[in-house]
Image (cartoon, rainbow, N blue to C red):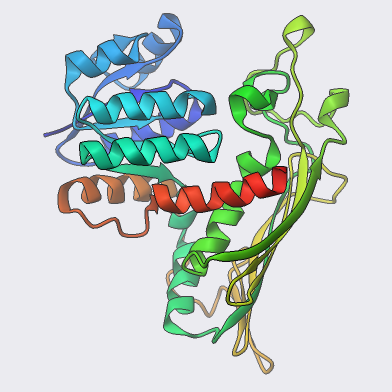
Length: 336
């Protein structure tokens, strides 16, 4: 039996709990949160036997095989390191940490303990992303020379005024929260090429005025309100082998509808992630022509692959700490 402890009680933690509980011979044995009342509610909802408000006490008493970290960003490093030192393999929500120095220290502890450290980037596990990755690997697109990636919301600033919009606790705003998803996908599709130049711009046009709030996360008002992060960012990354990656992201913008997509241009074909399409000069291959497009729960698939990695040693398409570090280096260059 593989034992799992969960750090965090929010939406992401619940997605992880559900996914682990669907796997035979895996048991979620404890959950830890800041509020005992909230943690008890999650434990009751998912029949988790042990409740904690101190993650180190939980790690000592449970001696779990796996720890999943689903807490605010500024807690990821310390909790992941504590878990690895306690003997657990770690699945940590993105971003793995709030800066590259923290990621470096996590990699050092991973290497010293011999434990596994994986970062949760569930967008890799959608059927569309997996298919697109497969055809790129097979050479269907030919040589990919340009990538356009975008996640732009109409009104979706999370947890306005709280830790999401406090740079000291989040590490940043829209770029490190949602831009990181399409940036990770872009780099993953290209097998994480080395970068040559990175330029970008970011700022706030909504949040600093209290505008653009979404319905995700707990809003904070009054004297505790903090908003010192960007709500939009644009960047251009040029790789050492000459590929151009364009990135746009925004928590809030005056656009007709929310946009999420990664588009790739190759010298044989082009492709789009959302909607899943492949193009050539003579024909457009839409989702109808692409096999195996179906609704899946990418959290379930990611957690299943993580458990398999812990048992078999095959990381599959999971996000490694080194890949997360490469993405964070790009983000930090844009923030300069």
